[in-house]
Image (cartoon, rainbow, N blue to C red; front, side):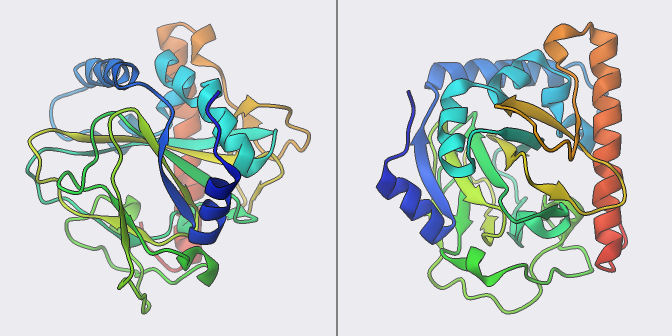
Length: 278
């Protein structure tokens, strides 16, 4: 069983992140990468749409297996308790030798979730070294609360909406969090983080899974969907998503379209709430 020590749990709560965590083997991660790249080859030519990077655990059986892997959930249970939902998931990909960055931001900004107990498990499907543009965290910044994010796009960033923190932030003690293929990085929804360009010769591929305890609510007017991955949902704050492992290909695509569409509606509403035009 994969477990964090008490010292590692304490470090997560103190710093707002912890990495690396040995969860999967490099061979498993490379197999999931092959599955992802096989899926990419079925997509239309040109830039990949946001919908073909997000909530794919509702569409692709292997992604649902990964999101619900008991080794990963054993770790998440230590941080979130026994009843766990996956609110969303995203493949964060930087192509080799490219200038794309992730600007300083907090995940919580446009999710609309409360209380702030969402934790992201970032699963490395390729090596995320410093050279490749691993995440960089400002330790303890999760204790600052929700920070303001700018209303104009930040050039060159792959952030959702291209927004970044707009108020003063001390990054002088920022820490790199490199992870090898198959390892996992954990971070709190309010931790300020960024990542630099990928200067390596390989794709930098991370699968970010947004886990929340079942008691968390969404504050928007639109009812959101989520996937129950462990325990029991005693609260009913979310519509539970279909399991793609029980559906045929057409039903998988339709389930994903519904779930992602609802997610986008909620995200846009949160942006509008903060005066940001999507």
